[in-house]
Every structure is written in structure tokens, then in C-alpha cells.
Length: 548
Image (cartoon, rainbow, N blue to C red; front, side, top):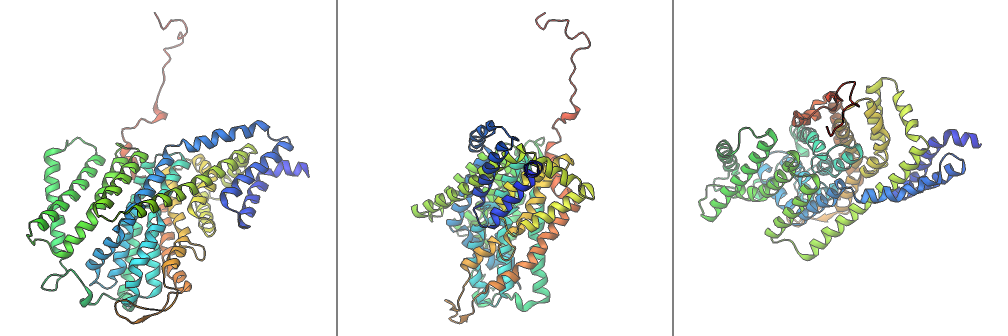
């Protein structure tokens, strides 16, 4: 029995962890307990030295001193402040007015706002709950199919997983040992393509099943011009004028030899400021050049967009670290909330409390995974996993397919924090052994882990939506008509098409790595360590004194 334990302690330890989690024990404590128990077992069997446990305090303090992880509370606080300042409500209302006359317009508006919230909050719960509270009653009021409405809201909220400043990407960058800025740049195109895929699905529904996504009645459309038009044309003109002015300013003021990243950040930031200035001048001087809906859209959309461009842009071009960018974003969100006069002391306290809770949750899991990984590697568990994965049929492609399927299945039971802290340390070294680009690998895993929020019956996005969706029939406050409740089955059915879209996105990233590896263009001037040659001065290097 002793010989069997010694030979198979690594797989026994791994499956013991799975059993503990299936029994319902908290993940952080399951990881830590499994690591400590098997450390004592290894010591008793003579496999490990008792000095191994002396390393634990140093590992824990190392986590607390990790500057990269400090970006977690900053970006979380930034998103929660913006959400509590009414930004989501303003965006949904104004963008909904723009798209309202179009069949499926509300669904398009939810997806567009979901992408904007993803780029500002980075927190799935805040996005799903905000859009569920604001847009779901309107969709139900005007006859949207319940499965389509709930699916759109839940899926749009999960865009926070892949669109920077995603908390998932921060953690994956830390676990894979890659810069957060590179991970953010690599994730931009997959995030935008996924947003476009959601819109294509809604367009398909609107075209071939129009009863499921009706347009808003004309009588409920506010902010329209006197002639009944939507006023969107003046918004497009303002955007175009802003683009022209920005191009002229860039040509005159910006060094043409500046990097492409720096020019892009300056151009986007300048464009948003010019458009905002146009709306301010039009309102202050009562010029009536912009329609009411155009003004409302600019005032609701441009300030958070400017904050996004500044925060993410400074990270992309290397001016700020993710931690510094997160701190700047938190300060900017505080200023925007104060400017809107919607930040009370109670809301500020709620944002701080929620930030502390989420950050503590992540750190506790990371501490537990560190304890587990210390013992697991000491008993050569990493070699056991590497041997299993390296010998999969198909080589590198077989490994990637296996990992994708494994993460998809594990996402039924684990959320993204748990997947990142448990699975990534096991498969990351194997991916590096294959020579796989680790940023591309991280984005591939992030897109796959996004499905963890949509899986019935454990998807957290579905739970968040269930908590705010009406569970009983109710009388609508506007029309006075009775509205049927939203069932859990309808929420689950609505998630399935979007899970399929997310899986298709995983396949696209697998087939077209260039969607992610474009981030390398920012490192064209970097020195390849493999090309560095060190000359020691010939065979007589030891004969001359350096002080001669």
C-alpha cells in the first residue's frame, strides 16, 4: 500500500481535490486543505522534507506584494462606481432610442451597451444586473420573446470576460507570466468579433422571426425631431466633424514619427473630446445643430469612452502599467460620478464593499491554489500532468483541442476564478513546452472560460439574471397590462444559441491565431534573446586584468 501511494501520490492528490469540490467545500479551502494534508502525507512517506512547509509564508507574502494583482481592485472599483453613477441606465436609454425604430433595435442596443459596459466595468455581475433591471422590463413590455431577451442580456454581460479591462485577462496574464498590456491588445479583436457575432444573430432573428424582436412603437419614442425623424443623422455629422478636426490636429501637433499605438490613443481621445465639445457648445448657445437624441447620446457615451481610451491606451503604449492605469481609471470614474451628481456616500460605500469582497475572493483562491501547487509540484505532479498531455495524439493540435474541451466541460462546475487558479498552472507549462504563444493561449482560454457564465444550470450570468427577472406575473407600470413571469427554463433556452456562438469563437481563434498575435506588432523593436551573442574576448580572456 505504501509503495502504491508513493508511486501514485500525484494523481491521488489531484482526484482528491476534485472529490472535495464536488462535495461542496469552498474552493479556496479545498485547495489549501488538500495541499497541506498531502504535504504531511508526503513527509510521512519520506517523499518530502518538513522544510517544504517553511516556504508557504514566503509564497503568501509574494501574492500580497504582486503589483499586477493590485489592478484587480482598481478596475473593479472603477466599474462599480460607473455602474452606480447611472451610466448603464443612461446608455441603455439613449442607445435604445437610437435603435428603437429598427426591428430588434432593443436587442442591438443591449449588445452595444454590453460592449461599452465591458470596456468600463470589467465585472459580469454589474453588467448583467444593470441591463436586466433596465432593459428586460422594456423588452417584455413590447413583446420580445423571453428566451431571446434573456439570452441577449446574459450574453452581452459576459463580454466583460474578454473585452479589456477584463479581470480574467489580468489573472491569466499573471498566471501565464505575460504582460497584461499584451493580453489586452490580443483580446481586442476577438472581443469585437464576438460582439459582432451577437449582433448578426439578432439580425437573423429580426429578419426571419420578426415576431420575436419587434420594433418600438412610434408613440413611445422620445427625443425625436419635429418631423418625426430619429435625429441620428446629426449624430453622424457630429462624429464626422470630430474626425476631421482630430485628423487636422494630429497632422499639425503630433510628431509623425510617433508610434502607431501612441497616435491611435491620441486620435481616439482627441476625437471624443472634440465631439463632446461640439455637443457642449450646441447646448450652451442653443444652436439646435444637434437633435435632442444626438445630444443625449454624446453626453451619455463620450465621457466613459474617453476614460476607456485614456486608461487602456496608456497601458497599450507602455506609458502606464496596468496597476497605474487602473488607479487612473478609478479616479476618472470617481470624477465622472461626481460630475453626474449621482454619487452618494452610501453608493460609494457599496462600491468599496463590493470591491473588497471580490478582491478578497480572488486572493483567497490564489492563496489556496499556491498551497496546493507547492505540494503538487513537490510530488512531481507537474511532471505527471505534462507527461499525460505531451503524449496526447495529434501533438500540439491534439493538446489544444483537449484543453479546449476540458475547459468547456470544467466551466459547467467552476467559475472563471477557479478555472484560472486551478487549471492554468497545470496546462500553462505544457503549452510553453510546445512553444505555443502564451498570450494567444491565454486569450483562447479566456474566450472558452466565457462560457462558464452561460452554462445551464450553473452559469453565474444566468443566476444574476434570474435574481432580477420577474418570477411572478405583474402589472406593467406604463401600460397597466399583465405581463407573464420569466421562467428559469426560458433563461436557460435563451443561453444556448450564445454558447454556440462562443464556441464558434473558440474555433475561430484556433484557426486564425492572427486575431490575437497582432499584439506583436508593438514589439518589433524588441531584442530577441536568442539572437544575443556574448563575446568573452577570445581564448586569453583570463590573462588580462580588467583594471589594466
